[in-house]
Structures are given as structure tokens and as C-alpha cells.
Image 1 (tube, helix red, strand yellow):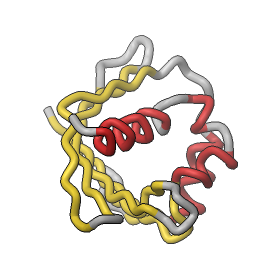
Image 2 (cartoon, helix red, strand yellow; image 1 turned 180 degrees about the horizontal axis):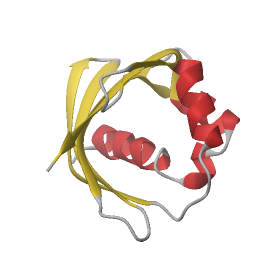
Image 3 (tube, one colour; image 1 turned 180 degrees about the vertical axis):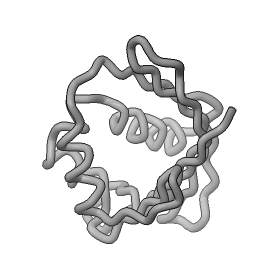
Image 4 (spheres, helix red, strand yellow; image 1 turned 90 degrees about the vertical axis):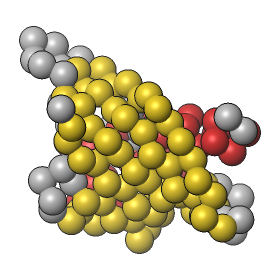
Length: 122
């Protein structure tokens, strides 16, 4: 894994952390204002929809893990990442998904997510 791949994986993992998911400023530093997400339900969610939903999540002991991370550089300032995620809530069965994100290197020297999609898997 190269430095950029490791960096983008660490940014994805930050978005799994409850401290980040509950901080507007942290979320705004990771998501581009034009961010879009296609959720597992097939619904389209915009930047403010996602930030509001994450800020409203109750602390429930959810654990999230990331495996099989891959990065594909689309251009010098655009990268596609894919990985498998597992979300485990106490007293519930784990939920597994295949995830993809597009990250963009912005003029301020920061990588920000512009697109994300999660698809439930068995």
C-alpha cells in the first residue's frame, strides 16, 4: 500500500469514529460541500442530509471495521477507493457492505470525499 492509499484509508476510518461522526467541524473537513451519497436503500443523500443524520446518531456502541481496501488513482487529484465494511451493534447481527468513495485533492491541500456509495452484502 502506498502513502496516498494509507492516507485515504485513514480518512475513511475517521468517518467510522463516533467522535468524528458527532462533530460538524470534523465532518465538514472530510466531506466536500458538493458531496453526494447513494445509500444502501438506493436513496440519494446530499451534503447537509448526511451531516445532519450523522450528528443525530445516538451513541449505541456500534463498532465499524474496514477490510480489503483498494485505491485507484483516477487523476492526480481524484481517487476511487473501495472496501468492505462491517457494522456491529451490540445484541444485533453484523451488517456487511461493499463501499466505494471518490476523494478529491482540493486547492487547500486537503483530500475531501465527494461521493460515497454503500451496498449491502451477505
